[in-house]
Amino acid sequence: MLRWIAVAFATHIFTWGSAFAEDSPHAMHALAAESESFEDGLLRLAKGHDPSLALVATAGSAVAQVRVGQFSCTGFAISKTRVMTNQHCVKEQYWNLPRDPNKADDFDASACSMMTVRFGFQTANTELRTTYQYAPPPAIDVRCKKILLANMFHDVAIVELVSELPEAIVPLQLDAEFVPDRRNILHIGHPGGQPKRLFTNNIASTSAQSCNAIPLQFAGGQGPDGDQHPWHDAKNTHSFVHSCAGPGGSSGSPILDVLNMHVVGIHWNDSADCSWGHFADRSTPGARLDSRINQYFLPGSRAISMREILLFLAITP
Image (cartoon, rainbow, N blue to C red; front, side, top):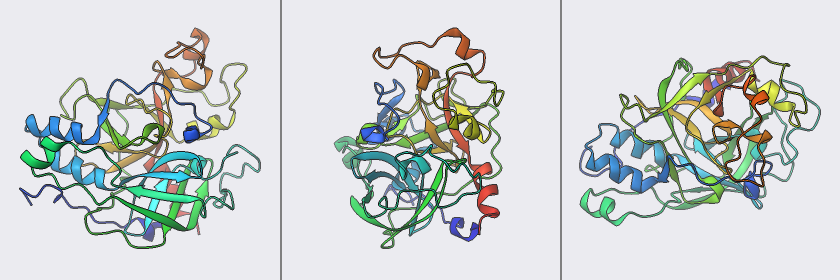
C-alpha cells in the first residue's frame, strides 16, 4: 500500500521563478471568516512577499473538488493517477455496520461511476495572473476508474483515476512525522461545492493569526449523553484538532504544514462557533454549544492524522 504514496513535489507554478448535499451528512455553515478565494489568498501572499507563496501555489494545484452525484467533497492528488479523500465522501450512510476497523472496501458500489474529480476549479484573480504571472492549473474533470480503499475508522479513501494528471498538477507529499503541538497549518478546499478556497488568516509561520494543530483532548467512550453520532468516537482516536474551520464540502481537504506544504492530516469535521458542530442548533447560524459538551471536547475542527493513516496503509494488503 505504501507504494501508492511515493510522490514528487515541485514549485514552478509561478513563471517568474523556477458532503453537504453538497457534502451530506455534514450540514453547510456560513463560510469561515478565515477563508478566502484561493487566488485572492495567493495575491495577498505575493503582495506581502511571503516566502510560502510558491509552495502554497503548487500545493493548491493538487486540490480538487470530488463530486459523487449531488454530494460534494474535497480531495487531493497523491500521485499522478490517485486521489485521497474522506471515506464518508464515497459512502452516503457511512456509519452503517459492519464497524470493522480494518475494513478497506467500505464504499457504495455506485460511488465510482457517479464520481467526477475536478481540478483547477478556482475563481480567477486578474491582478495575480497578470502582474505576478501566476499560471493556474488546468481546469479538468477526471473520472474515477476504481476506489482502491475506503476505511471508516480513519475516514480515508483512495481513488484511482482513469487517466494520468498533467504536469502542472503536482501531487502532494504525505508526512508521517508531524506532531500537532500547536504548529501552524492551513488547508485548501471546496466548501459547499464552491471554487477553491484557502483557509487561514496569515500563512507566515510566526503569525499569531495562523491556524494551529492541537492534540485532541477527548476521553474516548465518555462523550456527553445523547451523542447522535457515536461513530465519531472511533475516528477521534486518530484525530487532532485544528483552528481552520472548514464548512461542508471541505471534507477530504488536505491539512498542510505551513513550513513545507506536506499533508499532515485530512479534514473530516467542521465545528460551529469553534465547538463540536453536530451538537449545535442547526437552525441558528453560529449557535454555541451546551457547556456540558465542552468539558469533553476541545473546541475546534477535526482532522485525521496522516501518521495514523500511513500506519494503517502500511498494514493493509
